[in-house]
Amino acid sequence: MSTPTPTPSPGQSPDVRPSASGWDRATDSEKLPAEIPDPEVVQVPQQLREEIEGHMALYPDSTSAALPALMAAQRVHGWCSPEAIEQAACVMRVTPASLAAVASFYDMLETSPVGRHAIYVCTNISCSLRGADRIYESMRDAAADEPDLNVRSFECLGACDIAPMASVDGVYVGPLEEADIPRLIDDVRAGRPVLAAKQLAHRPCADREANA
Ligand code: FES
Image (tube, rainbow, N blue to C red; front, side, top):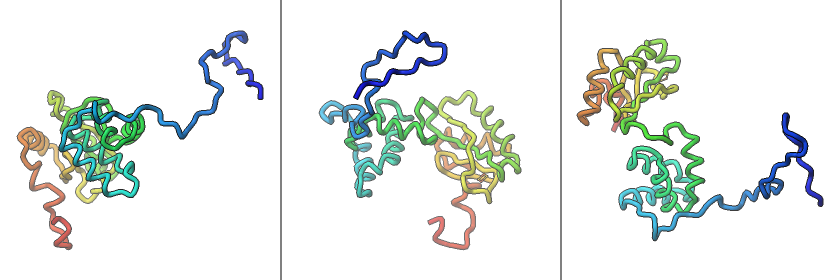
């Protein structure tokens, strides 16, 4: 079968043709895009290796552990750096490219350096109606000189009953007032439980086991 003649793009001279070899061949979707990291070469911290292997053991197809594996690597490295992804890929026996594709899709996986403490301020409708936008702005201002804090606005975090609220390293706190912000940031800085009295986990609940 003859190779079709490519159509020049708009503005392109008709005698200029793409020259990249193989441009007209179909992609082999079965082919791995890169090498799987060599465990003899890539050093993986023992604790990270064990955690990833633990996640892999939970799934019939171990590649399903990509998300928790990346989260674990992110916790160790602060973000999904090339090194973090390579280590996770080495343990999972997949290519770094396959994990990089996952990391770039999910916004709780960071693909550039950020502060280690994730403060997600919900600015979705229930929280917004109760002043979340002001709280978000104040939180950003208060953390402006704190490189260790990653303050972001977030879509509904599923705790509208404590609106306006935030997730601080995964701990839900609310309802927030602007006056809570200095204390919240102090708690994070000091490694204390954040706004202990406003944590969702400490709210009374009909189900006694719910917060166990
Ligand atoms: S809108 Fe903020 S938790 Fe749902």
